[in-house]
Length: 296
Length: 163
Image 1: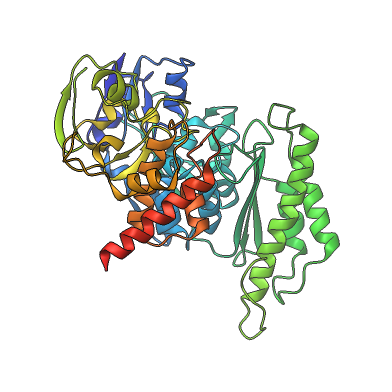
Image 2 (image 1 turned 30 degrees about the horizontal axis):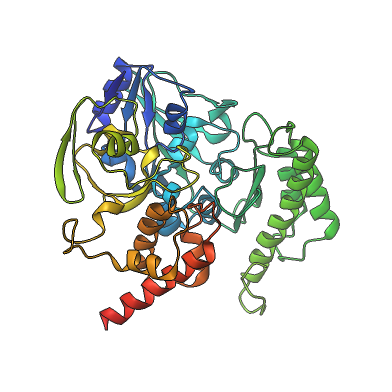
């Protein structure tokens, strides 16, 4: 087995081109579990920890470009105000030790349907920047990045450089079902992102289909239904219809963590709750209404 | 392969490290540092927690080769002085002893490193903050109440010492 340790992004791309079967390792929170349990023994590990570029983030033309190696703890501390949905999801990842090491790049690379960062990425129209030495950069929308259970759109010589997303233009929420509040892999999860500028609602459904996905019909329905102009109250029937459409968008399975029926039910509850929180925030954001911004 | 890194302030070189092994394995099996415990090997239990460049991490999830040129501090490196009568335990270690926060002791090293980090970052942690910080450290004797007592005790002593 080889251990490759490039010190720059350029060298990392060269190493991946030369060893396409090398498994990139960042925080190790997925890769090392497979190694420790002998599930998977790759011909080489490609350590990306020394590649400083991956641990940086920046604002570019109003968008955020976040290096694939920025750990969850930094997303929470440094970007929590600009990406509240992703920060909430990050807070539910493992334990402090795991959040110190785990990265969105690793989540994308592993492409588990249960990965916590996926729903907010999908709901917030994130785009994944990948690169190879031979063909340069490709920009892949998050919705197209996941291709199957633990499969993604990366070519063997490509590495994940960063993800791009807008600073939240409106309220964002994430919700996740698990057996306790910490150290939990999602039974299912849901993210919502309101965009008052485009008057669109974004959604992300996690751990309830072979890949993370949007609930497109639910988004279309709600975007047309919400009273964006007057910030009017959310009708119970609209919230229920939205929840129903989110549920219909899922195609979960029965497994050790939960049944398909339970997941569908839980998704409809999370959809309704997160929508209520988000819409209350949006309504409360009107100056002088006297309504608090805090979500319940 | 060869790995060069600093552990508990001392520069070390370790040879014949297998490329796929964890930092935990290297510490315990190749370097005579068995303080970090091996339990779940999947980041669920926290008993192998060490500082990596000053940040707590599960050493079972760090590939040994990833610490090249870096700094690791294990539970063995918290006390000052060499082993023997001149050794002084860290206040967090003292507090665990005094509060009776040790039952079988297997989770203790990880809890001590994680608590040590918490108190450094948050000098006067609330119960909620302690619980969140220790959420990834499992005690299967379920002695959590005493562990919380120990963290509160260590924090209050540290605050008193700083005055």
